[in-house]
Length: 154
Image 1: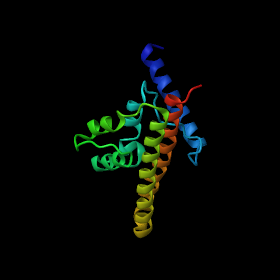
Image 2 (image 1 turned 90 degrees about the vertical axis):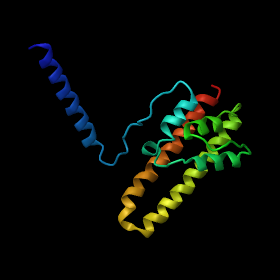
Image 3 (image 1 turned 180 degrees about the horizontal axis):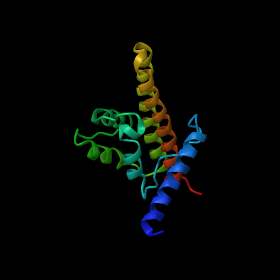
Image 4 (image 1 turned 120 degrees about the horizontal axis):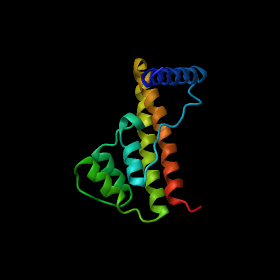
């Protein structure tokens, strides 16, 4: 046996383990969090909450502007990433962060309500919107985790 054979054996074994774990978890209740660890909360939120593929919600530039307005902040429309940084730059206390998280959660809830409305109106799309709603609920839990990790004193 050479190195190539050992690598192939390892790959086959890992695939077999992965399939066995997937088969054992039919209802997705034992699914692991797909979130990574980040050195700061800005990167964590931008990487895990802002992409719709991860959070199930698209936060547009106008959404960011409306969320800032709810917190009595204001900034010009710009590139989405820059707007996100401008939106997050005023956070200096855990209370500020909690306010931001609540605004994010409120917008997520609002968009999920729209998804449920679309699901009811267009039953063929229910499966698609259910996936988005499930991702958005995980995103809300992730926001809580970010707050606990970066803003609570142990």
